[in-house]
Image (cartoon, rainbow, N blue to C red):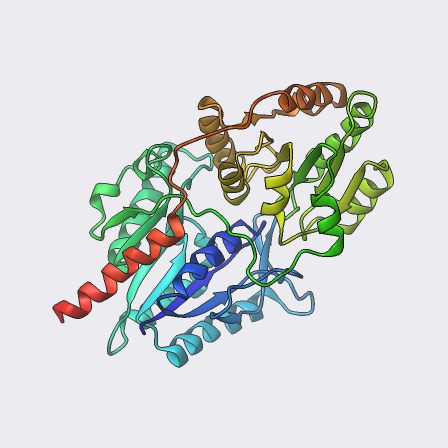
Amino acid sequence: MKKMMFYCQYLAGMGHLVRSTEIIRSLVEEFQVCFVNGGQPIDGFEFPAGAEVVHLPPILEEAGKLKAVDALQSIDAVKTARKMRLIEIFEAFQPDCLIIECFPFSKHKLKFELIPLLDWVKAAPHPPKVVCSLRDLIMTQTMTAEAWMARYDKVRDLVNQYFDLVLVHSDPKLVKLEAQFPKVNQLRCPVVYTGYVAQSPPESTQLSAEDELVLHQATPMIVVSAGGGRFGYELIAAVVQAGKILNSHIPHQIQIFTGPFMPEAQVATLQAQANHRIVIRRYTPHLLEYLERADLSISLGGYNTTMNILRTGVRSLIFPEASEEQTGEQTLRAEKLAEQGVLQVLYRPDLQPQRLAQVILTALQKPQSSHHFDLQGANQSVIQLQKLLYKTASVA
């Protein structure tokens, strides 16, 4: 059985972790997998059974700068430890394939550890194949034309120097890589669209008694989620205020998941303002089941939440403007899907409580959405990796 080493780093939310572990869930059926996780731990998060999980000293990003999660550690010390640890993991595991999530198309702040790892891999006696696992939308920052051209050249050169395959977790019917990276035809390795990676229900984490009770109630349910939670307070606070207006219009319950990284003070404020129809929790591994039961989803516009909406067909309101860092990506994806009637986009003026309450009431009257986008990205990733590794083996 061939061996896969999969590197994942999430710096702000948890979307990269969710997408990567969904791919791992399919990989472990065909490969021996070592999953290297560099992000902040999340209580209750389920890693796929069968994968070896190795945690690097965790880092996050605040105000555009990397920061150690452990406040007692300097970022420089953590960087040094991580760089050495990655090479140790590679040497101990001896993978046939190294998969790096997003880099070099984004996450250039991680070059301090990824370039040394890639150089080490390239110099190995039997170098493994190197693959980029890439989401649908990248490079949405605001930069000058000259800066963009320099970025494109840099990405092209890094891909050509180190990578054997780029897997794009998108459906080209909605988003094509060349729309954001015009030098695709200058890449010397194959670029393959896998379809979108949609989340599966957890394998071993059972529904709690509270979950069972909520999911079997007949009252109309609105599910509000904010991904990792660092940027979701504005949206959730608006829903809490709108919920007070909804009390006089419809019977309902509002289940809110703030995300594991929302600051404690913000969660406490929300709980103090919530009424008896609103339940506020930090995180559930069963968000997919909640969306399948929900009459309406209100959320930010991250990749995985959007895939959950596509998978379940739930009516959806998406607010893609919560974070300056992610607005370009989330807005572009949400507006493309809104054009096809899959969801409705919320903009900042829509968060005024009276207006939001009316938007919610209107949305609840609409039929559930439908689409024809490919959501088999995890399974297709396995197929493409098998082709890469076993074709190479047969030629050798």
